[in-house]
Image (cartoon, rainbow, N blue to C red; front, side):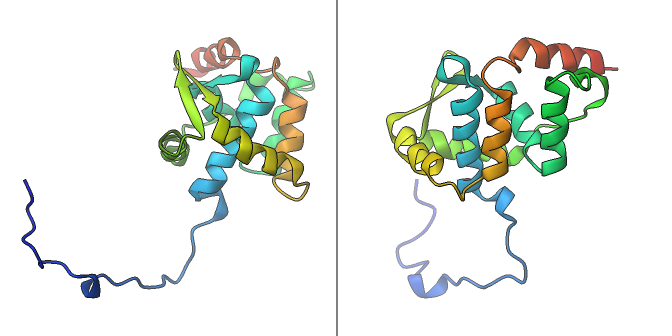
Length: 161
């Protein structure tokens, strides 16, 4: 059922206005989609990642201090489960939906996998040495085996009150 009558809204009635502040890059969909792709690429065993793992790693990629703390904890300097606090990010969920809709990733058996289209985009990101330098370096250090769903779930249970 169409609730609008013909000619109710015309293109002349649609107006865009510049806002006094811009959206930070870390909340922009293309940034988050790119993060999703590089997280899966660098840390996804079998080329796939769970939603839990994407949220967990994405949280620590928010700034350089968190990235260092995560890498140090995984290298044995600190216990990951002792004091870290993290949260689910709604912007990641929105980016996942867009990445699925735009066919950058696909969902298989509860995990996310990079599609052919996503691999084409990812190849451009990986070959550009000026894009996401710290994030790529951190993810390389984490690798495919240092963080898994079991460790994250254990952490959640230990932190639950």
